Image (cartoon, rainbow, N blue to C red):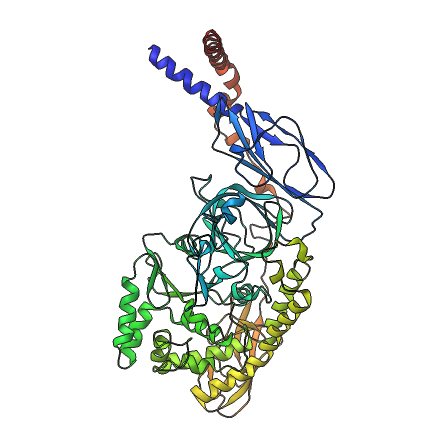
Length: 639
């Protein structure tokens, strides 16, 4: 019995003590203009702290308030009940800095980045220069090392979405060699929480949990517009192609301003889980030709071998392919890469599938920083080549598209879909408006003073003037690319020329080639001789009557064989009627009244008598608990 009482007392005291621990600071993380005096308060034995990013367990003991008037990261290590707690705390104080973007602040020991032995950002003492490759090899930044740090995310309102210990690594492949590098941050239980919590990405508000993030410099675009890949993700957001969500942020490390970065999703098994509810065991990700990033490569290799061994893409073979590959997703992906002239696409291919879905492989748009280059590059021709003509089109990277083009249904869908996207998603006006959107975000957030940047890459920072030139290059590409790519399609795939399609009308919407509805009137350029489907969008309010020529079928096909084509649907708008006798009759609110007489009488009785019935039990509980604590304190003092 004594043993049982001892266990109960121990549990009780531990719970009470755990509830009693508290720690707070007089000033929260945020932007400041004047000196602040920060005090640390709470119920703890002692506190150690650092102001330079080092782990606070080896810092100074806190005795008095701290005067802070410059960018500072305050890391706090509390002790309670004689023991050092596993949890550390971070406060980031940033002075005389204005921004409309979220801020990511990282506190990390300086040696974790710059030590020649184990610093992840430097070459390191074992690096050597390889004359044959023209690069430094065996560098620290080429290794997949991870270092402990603390990170917090402040949104545009000043709210802290997450503040926790985490791991940090250098991220990327060839871009690791650049002076300004991308980094990956990872949530692990050994550092604190094993997830980052918060809806970070506006384009995916339902995703409120993340395992990893990438702090991306924009790779090869880091001295250019710095938003090409984000722009492309924004453009294709409604095309059912997976993309990495983005959020431009201002980055500070140990209080030092590091510049404008893009916080991105990390493509891995967690990405599939958060975006598609795909379990780890059922999903797979394949990179490049056939490199397995996650899961099993068995299904992908089965598909690859099928294409490799295929002589002719007949109807039977095409049905088989459609059971393995999401055709519309693949078509949209290839069209986007070809239009963008992303010559590096062959090095960033990502397929994924999940048996939790339909098991078909789909594409992820990944790393398009090489896009928007030469508008007149014959990239479609390179992607349709049966043999390698350049570094960016090895046979394995073009095999799927060239084999699929042998089937008339795929070929027609590819041509029509390319034409439709050139009229909508990839239209110059659409891209230009999207560029304006990013310019409005980035223009006033670019490093306003190069001297604010770290010395190791401040000379690589692009000037405002050069940045605007890079932005104009994107606009110029979008304006000239459409005409060039239409010419390539006509030369390589159709040969019959183009026609203008006009679907007239003052209201309503039309669905072209099974895409999202577009509002009427609509005008676009399509290719002659390729049968194109038109279907009038209908719902409870919009009802199709007939076409202007008397045809009453809501779906019809046009080919443009006779040249420019104009067609008008007759659509009736049917307003939603609300009957006075419907349930939503606001003149009679009697149905909203609650009849309390139907409530359970026993429940009412028990509720009314509850305080009298149980008060003595709570009194006895409090008395016994107080006795336990008094006995425990007595013996602790005796010892």
